[in-house]
Image (cartoon, rainbow, N blue to C red; front, side, top):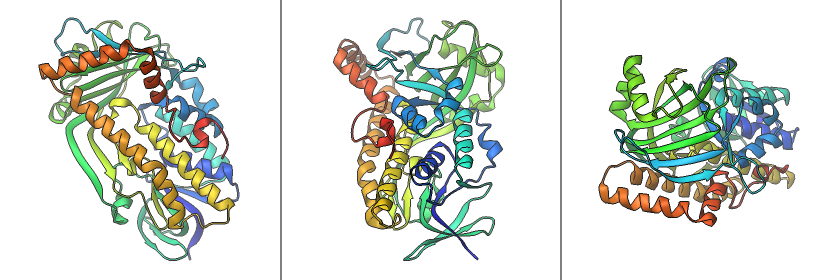
Length: 411
């Protein structure tokens, strides 16, 4: 016997949970379930951190979870960009950004993933969203009135709509027959947390090194008062594997060579992981009774720190399209309804994917003519206040055809 859900979201990360919560908050009568392969306790132990743009923060606030996240969040008060080699004694700063928008609010916060997902999980359970975990969608078959899902546990669900939020290597996207444009950068992103002697004062740093960007992102002090930052270190994949799998002493030496001593002595304060970096863009985002959302639709390089934020934009746009369709008495799984979401979001995600691809190719090399051109370009941007303001607004996720939730408005 199959159970019935109006919407099933496959993937219980921050994008999947925020989509489910947005739908349920706008229409409590809508039945929504989230299927997640990991147990909830594992989601709450995610040691990574993410940059949450101002618009995404407004969405989380409207969904009622930001107040739970805020104590763990660190405002970014300044951003500096350098372009140098690892062995350079001095790293000249070519570009600086103040961290505030025109109204004085930070353009972004650094948020521990565990705090963000934990708050979303608590809110989802409090609003009656069905959390099916640990479990996963093993297959589905789309019919005229519903999509029939079979879970790995054998459980069967009939859903009006299945939304795949299962990551850049989405299995459900493949099962739906949706092709992608994809290439590998030959880089991996090393992610870890570090502790340092001196406070960072909310400053984020992006050092463009020949092997890729080396980002130092400020975190709130821990319970013991230690000053901490999140590290996103792009490196050639073979070198990244050597560093992550090697001994702590070698990692500490290579870390200090790139990090420097401006914050005093540094040391690793969390586990280190390496993730392959590439560009993945889905050719289509929807099928009848099926939609992609977040990294399942677009996996981009972290050089601009926008992967999570365009995922939130997807969730906000899809929720708005579905709720408006439901209010008009339309079927939320109908292709013409889902096509509105695809038309709204696909070009924006494609554009961001191309921007991050060009930036990575431009800055992840050591060719002298290209270094000269890019450094002149950074210097010009630094001297043009209007252009800098535009960059800050882009980093804050403000601009374009924004969904209501990202403007802090109810659907």
